[in-house]
Length: 147
Image (tube, rainbow, N blue to C red; front, side):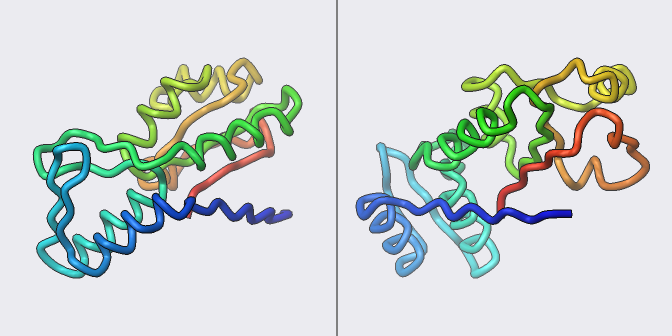
């Protein structure tokens, strides 16, 4: 196994938004309110922000940046046609990936079969649901995850 860590950094404007929310635990952005009621909620929302979007208090998605999607685009191009399995954490991550790329979710036995036959160039999985009992080893050897 070869790990290739790719750092993705926010620009100064995005970093200021992140830092302000981290310090104040409340933020209004794009006429949407973000409120972290405790340290765990703050940590979760900061992770979302670092991924590029965050859920507002009303459940809508507030876009912060596309930097991780840009990095994913580079990885897909670098795969040069080889299948890439992409792990996502938040539903808004999945939604934004599906909007930008020709990707498919791995949800059913048929999806697994298509992946293992090499018919899916970019596949999406959630680590919590794909961690046990799935055999995805025939479809490809490239995995991309976000931390």
